[in-house]
Amino acid sequence: MVLALQVKTGNGLRIEGVLACCASGNVRNACVSDTEMCIGGTCQWKFCSLTPRTTLCVLFEISAQFVTQYQHADGRKRIRVTTTCRSWADMATQQPNIAYSFDQEAGAVAMARLASWRAASENDTPDALRWLDRTLIRLCQKFGEYVKDDPNSFRLSDKFSLFPQFMHILFMENVLESTTMIQPVLFSYSFSGPPEPVLLDTSSILPDRILLMDDYFHVLIYHGQTIATWKRMNYHEDPQYATFKQLLEAPVSDATAILQERWPMPRYIVTEYEGSQARFLLSKVNPSLTHNNPYASEGGAPVFTDDVSLQVFVEHLKKLASSSST
View 1: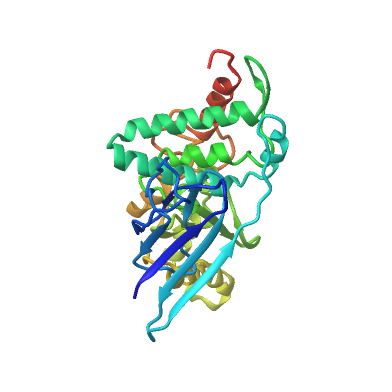
View 2: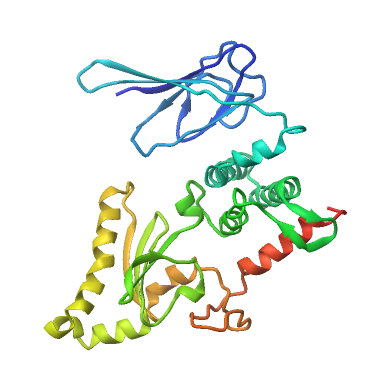
């Protein structure tokens, strides 16, 4: 089966390259820019597979039309054409319009792919991390609201508020492909109500909760100290505690649904308070409460780490973004 994507543009629009798992089709025409980014120098790319979950990051000098084609197993050639229509704005005069259209999740993924590409192609991971730092600071300087040299005055709009958090967690990740990998999803299960998303933070690790974490390559169920004790005492096997049994089964059902849809299949882990496999959860959460920095005063589990917390990271970012000397 042959799968290919061709990109067509109008006058004045040029293709710089693609960030995706593909190979160059080596088809060059007037649409191709002289400036190459990643897999560039062509207007056509070949793929080993295309699924409903496949996402491509195509870099343009402006914008365009996508022509995706493949040969079906029955021998017929299929083509799908997608034409984009976008409004354009001048950064010098229409910055608010550009800020309003910013997609911070897509931006984080694009940054991750670019950083991964730079680290792999230039064989210099530290330089890629410094590039991420500089890019984040420049973005905050451009779109943040602040008084020069006053970090306390720094504010980001809702369109940018999560971007520093994505970048902070990205710095600690070793695989850069999607927002789930950049910032794992964490759900809490309790007797007080239905499952709810919670902060990826040590404050969310409570004794009477069950946590379900999905970081794309791992799907983990964590039983808090109290839950683990009740389970060892086999309360879930007693009909009087049917609610407790349902609580234990709920995250298992949700995890099974994730495992059935995900490819490649992630590692499935069930662990508990002070369990050896709990390290997969503790390595992902923001260390707001550590062995030497009791940042949080209510609940949560301390993490033994020297990593910088999100709070410290954001405060330092504000200082750099608002500084007149940066």
